Image (cartoon, rainbow, N blue to C red; front, side, top):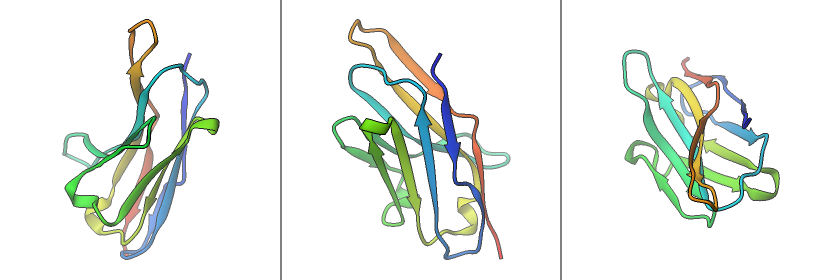
Length: 120
């Protein structure tokens, strides 16, 4: 069973920084994408940033230039460096691991979520 363990959330002032980490308990063979989604109260879950096995990235327009996603394949870990945080970044952040096994089986795993609150 794959588990995604997140850490690094918390309370930060506007303009501050936080780094989120997410480690997968299992390394799944083949290409995949690891990344972060977020859900604010009363809103739908939305993509924040994802990074593929080969290193290509995709960001939400709202975080471009402020957030950086990276991964350490040897540690099965994805990171989200968040700078210049704004109140509107307040949400529960969820880690995601998705891809296809070498046999073509689709998988899609989620972490338990970590709260990020940006407030003075």
